[in-house]
Length: 219
Image (cartoon, rainbow, N blue to C red):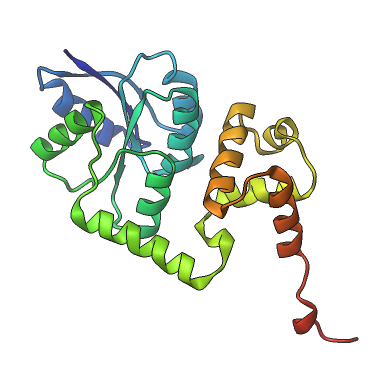
């Protein structure tokens, strides 16, 4: 069975090279391409792709948030992050966004083909180093005791809006996202913060916004 692949990278030369590489494999076929987040959101859903290969850095956003948005719309889509930079922060955010793997652009061609095959089969590409980095990151943040450190930037923004009393629809309109995506953000941040209800998140958001009386100087 042939796995269908969608490529998202703002460099045409990179897309051409990856396309030719993947199409040379009998069991892989590139079914579409995009050079930005907006193009990807418009084209991927109708492409029938099994795998999306996403550049982390894009001109109108980043591949990590794109991964989260695509996965909210297409739960069966497997995402492979492709980047030029070794970044544990990006690795952590990518895995939390639902990516199945994270590879560097300097990867050998045959290894990239195998990586796409692995992700297409629904398997994770996290190696021992990546897994260790991820677990250490989670452990550090728990020890530091700052609850919002485990949230992505988008999740923190959603938390702030919850604190303002906005509904999912209002948050979606303000952040230019689908309402379903906002609902997923809310579910993720509640789980990460160990909360059960939206009202608890609102209380936390307001507490974090207020200055600590102990550190406030009298005028």
